[in-house]
Amino acid sequence: MKVTRYMAIGGLVAAGLLFDACQKSLEIPAQGALSDEVLATRAGVDALLTGAYAALDGQYNNGSALNLAGGNAWEASPSNWVYGSIAGGEAHKGSDGSDQPAVDAIAKFTADPSNGYFNSKWRTVYEGVNRTNSTLRLLAQATTIADADKALLAAQARFLRGHYYFELKRMFNNVPWIDETVETTAASSQPNNVDIWPKIEADFQYAMENLPNTQSDVGRVNKWAAMTYLAKTYLYEHKYTQAKPLFDQVIAQGVTSNGLKYALTTKYHDNFDAATENNAESVFQIQMVANDGTGTIANANQGDMLNFPYGNSPFRCCGFFQPSQDLANSYRTDATGLPLITAYNSSPVKNDQGIASTQPFTPDAGPLDPRIDWTIGRRGIPYLDWGNHPGADWIRSPGQTYAGPYSPKKNIYMQATQDQYADNHSWAPGTAINWNIIRYADVLLMAAEVEAQLGNLEQAQTYVNQVRARAANPVNYVYRYANDAAPLAGYSTTPAANYKIAVYPAGTFAGLGKTGALNAIYFERKLELATEGHRFFDLVRWGIAESELNKYFSYESTVTTDIRGGRFVAGKNDYFPIPQRQIDLSTSSGKSTLTQNPGYN
Image 1: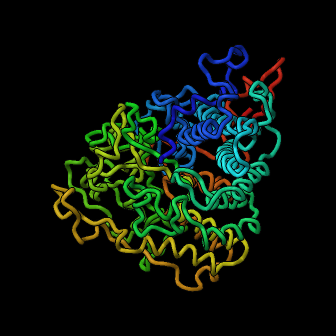
Image 2: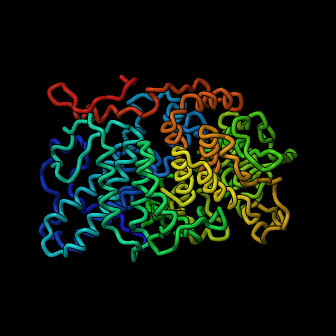
Image 3: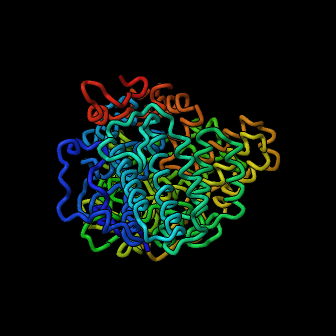
């Protein structure tokens, strides 16, 4: 079962969205709502828990194209394509300057607290918190549920609450902690002046201790996902000695919810194909489903509905989320197949910017990491099984000058299976491709970081080399079509580019020292996890966001026009502003309960 199919269950959650302006004036019980006495059964609590799972993708009651904040679904997408990837320099907003200009402000770090995207994200993630709290409140009232079942239900709810608060913490830092002991009417009066990391730790610790190794429903979380998320929390707090034994256990013993031993998939792209999801690399995924009978794409990754090639492409809409030239250049390798960690922009990847699709173009002939062509759609290279990317004809902005020449790729469904995994019940596409919150490659690279921080450079290199060895397997090359005119006929045995990638030779990390080894790990995360919503948060927790992003602005502004004037200021832009709407709603007698983050007043 994919638990996100049951979005309507969210309507059973206790009334009153967090920080809702209506909450102060409307206290009449919802007509037709079920009482706590009726719901306080195993089935009733599980129904609320299913609603808490359903909030993972931030969508609204099965029919609306809007998220719970009253804004557009993409404003709070769980993929964090805006907040993690665009703000992290991996991609441009795309489209054109008049479409969703609020994203341009976020990309350039000129956004203020009134930017509606922030309010949408805040409200949508807190709705997930609200649903977990409602589940836990009802569970406490249930008298007919066995203690073992209570622990299992509570562990899932607390895992989900830990996830939602983890999102809020790394986005906004100073956020109020509201748990099941806080009455709904008191939610808007909770201050945001207490560090919530210990409470997030406690939720994941409880989940780890009370969840089973496997679940009958693949979409439900297990012990190993909780252990991994607790280790990730420690990593964000720089508690490396606490994180290490957890990562050690996960790597040695961890299994997926459906019982597969954690491992890297042989094929990199299996992590981004609905036909091969919930595989051995899946630690924590948001379950997506297409054509679910609702007549909407609410359960089909609606938050990323804008992120498809435009123009004459087969996807109809919308030309957003265009990978950056900086990211493309990162995949350049040297003659031995190793990355150019500090000098990658000195050997830029050739692109077709300014060249019409009707004019000839020959792709870059230099050595490249093959992951570039599973991540970035570029001209002359097979775009999965849709044919060769034609260049400008699939780019929305005239001349490609606004956001560059590239298209996203990891969120794209296959042509051969589109009848099953694409959802066209809206003006833009939906897909059944699950979204990875944590996958095993991420685990290995987080573990490598912990080992390097603790001085265990040889073990850190071993973990990084596992990731690189998978990428170096020729099965992960993109191959030319046997017949360009009929891409569905299959592929040839000729690589589509000059792929050259190697593992680090023995002793490399030791020779680099701790700082050099960490830089190699940081760069490997960029290569492996590109456009998956991690980059901005990584840069901030590493303490290098200011230097890296300002270098990005300097370079990328010579390629495109959209981010010119962008500037990251350390101490301010490490976190996004507390939404002004939330501060206003927390105001009583002229005094706000919520305090704005530094630099945004």
